[in-house]
Length: 206
Image (tube, rainbow, N blue to C red; front, side):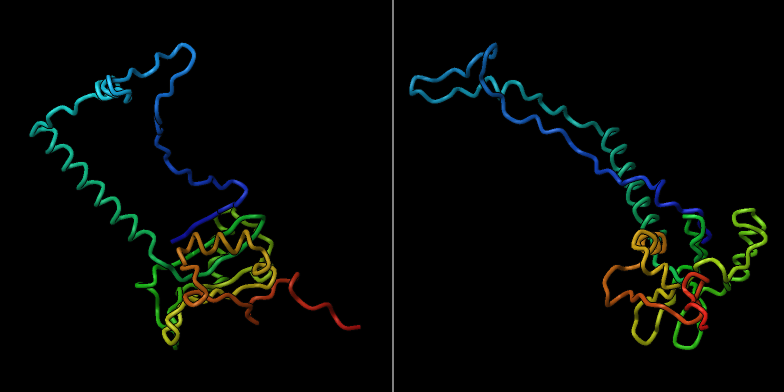
C-alpha cells in the first residue's frame, strides 16, 4: 500500500449519523391539552392514532431488503479486510505523512520479525520521481521510521526519529493509516539508532 500525502490539517472528522428523536408532545399555548377519561386519567387515544400503521411487506420488498442486507454484509467484510494491520516504512515531510506498507499476512520474514521488503532509500526515490518531495534532498534528511511485527512478542513495533515520536498528531496518523492496535501490549513505540534526521542529531562537540 502506498499512501500520501496525509496532512492532519486536512483531515475530515468522522461524523456519527444521528437519528432524530421526536420526544413527547407537551401541552402549551396554542396546543390542545390531552383529554381525560371519567376517572381523571389522561386519554392517550389521540397519540396512538397519530402513529402510522406499518404496511404489509410484499415478497418483492422482502427480496429487495434481503439483497441489500447481503450487499451490506459483503461491504463490511471488504472493509474489515482493508483495515488489516500493516508493516511498512514512512516519511514525515512538509507536514505530510508518506507511507509504504504491506498487510501483515504478506510481510516478509527477517529474523524474528515480519517487515515490509522495501527500504527508505528506494521509497524516497519513488517520491522524488513523482515530484512529491524535493529531488535534491537526501532521504536521510527527512524524519522517517518503520513498523515491524515481532514474532516473539506477537506485537507491532514503531521505530522512528525522536522528533516524530514527540509529534503526537503525526504518531496518531501512523497508528490510523497502518491500522495498528492502540494497546501498549500490542504496539510499542520507541527510537532507533538508524533513524536520526539532522534535527535529532546531537550538537557537534567543540
